[in-house]
Length: 197
Image (cartoon, rainbow, N blue to C red):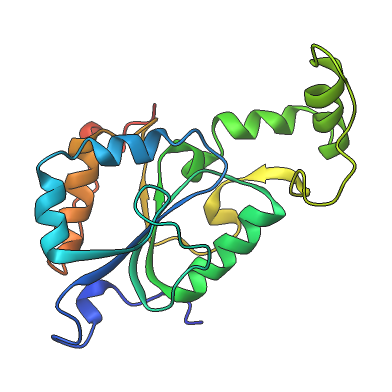
């Protein structure tokens, strides 16, 4: 894997008529994806220029595809499933965008880091806060194994672009991805593009 993945502008001309777009949801609330859907009419323009090849809102695919041009990643990395998907998407994506405050900073999922390790988190969630039937999950596969700490995406894989916001507004998302559809870098400057929260 190269240190810096090529941008969509570095792609061979006219290999594919459409940019291959993926969106991924890790540990987060799905607010960034809901904001993405708020692109409204721009989604028609996006559909003309990009093919959505993986997304929790547009497909039922389980395996991340190869040769993705642009991948928007919502959420922090909190468990082994998140970690595996992050490593896979980086391997198969030319440009990775840290999409929203949870991906950029770990944000709300990162509050779990205030507790001392995964055991304390499970004890708090499944025993202390249970209304009834308090017990730790014990069968494999019920809860993916938690990482020791919740991590922002860039602490796990190289990230090419940061798009903060909780969630980023549809206008900010469009301002970031529309230039990428034309092979140009977005202008990530000023409060309208860089404000957190």
